[in-house]
Length: 572
Ligand code: SF4
Image (cartoon, rainbow, N blue to C red; front, side, top):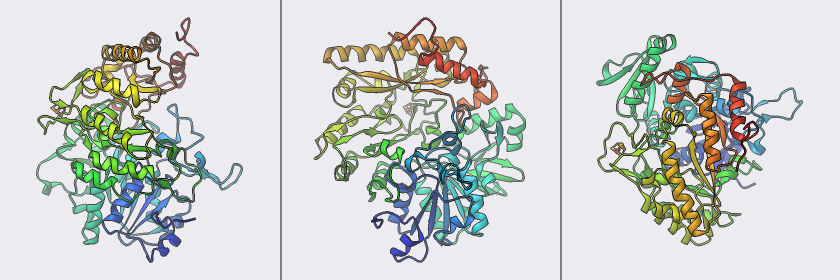
């Protein structure tokens, strides 16, 4: 087993590199996949590139605190990631049932040991960031702990936690870690590591994209104070006020929130440049899982895909991407994407098909703003696209065409979702991708067929979908393309009444939309939809919304859409 091209995952592999210790140990509940779609690989390679010795501690046996000392005591820090998704979202279904698989584990198997073994337990513990951090504290006193990843990002201020039905403190307090990095994290982690190397105290740092616990905020200058944890826990109006204030100010201001006698202080993140993003994706990833694994389902899904940009200005109320990656689009240069494609073409087993060149929404690649410095980022609101938005359609077409010309490439597909609003999906572009870049199935996310629910979701109305559909149908007819639309639908979003479910059913029938991408709404932390779910009203407009909490009713609604309980109708 040749592991020399991977970052070390054990003491043995570390010593093979001639190291006695690591500067940083990245601890993750996901299997280590050295591919730029996975956070541990990106952060590890980025720090390695900047001269740090990095160990990857993947899926430690977390009940044994000694497991966290695989590499011994790191010289500078532990970095604890919650993995690619929040551990509660991965471990439980949207109605709270434990899941039987985990796509980020070898073979999808979520347990250590075999069935029937007394020592059998889940590879990914619930609230993994807290569990790992406290085990590290117990095993290795005095070493700084940095937390990050989506679980930490979305729990960085006091938040509603659906799984415990409580308002919880910032995860920085609960995990007793020293510093939290939110967002994608490369530069915040690099600057934190440099500060640690210079013996700086983490609580004194003011690194963009991080949060720390401080006793005082007096020396910080202009700040915005959110209602305290105790206030938001005890009073829903304070919760709503904190949520709206956070949403409005967290990208541009230092914000703080008191929790007991201390303060959680968050420094606004810096948006990367395209040049910086290129450098991150140009690092020497092997694009393979570590050889100790056999088959990781999540790897199969992204193996032959390429990330072209980060960020999303869609502002969908249920989505965590804006809170994590930010609304600003940062696109890689065409040259950098093509370099990656040429590398991909040489990976053993690559069959010539790129499954995706995209990002959170594929057709946001290359987008920009004509004025810049806009505080709202309401680029798509009520189905209308802001007149200052500069869509990157031409750049994206040119990128797709150039990718198809690369040696060893036979097909280039778009696997990421596409926004269907007219300015982002003009006829020229839609015709081009239907002819050459959609593998027979086009993923589209109307999310609901009820305009009232769509308004609560922050999505465009059904008339915007109708406009898209007419164009799509005409192009398919003219070009004789046998394409199928795969709709993404959320069931049980706050504001959805039974009659809205029937409206969605009729919408699906009307447009002859079929598929299995119907998901019950999961109230993940820090989204506006989750705030609505908790409060029973929109936190900012104060408009009341109906909320369904009963599992049976949610399942019934899903059945109405999936066809098993559709009454007299069936798909046409
Ligand atoms: S001005 Fe318009 S396009 Fe520019 S960021 Fe603001 S909402 Fe988006």
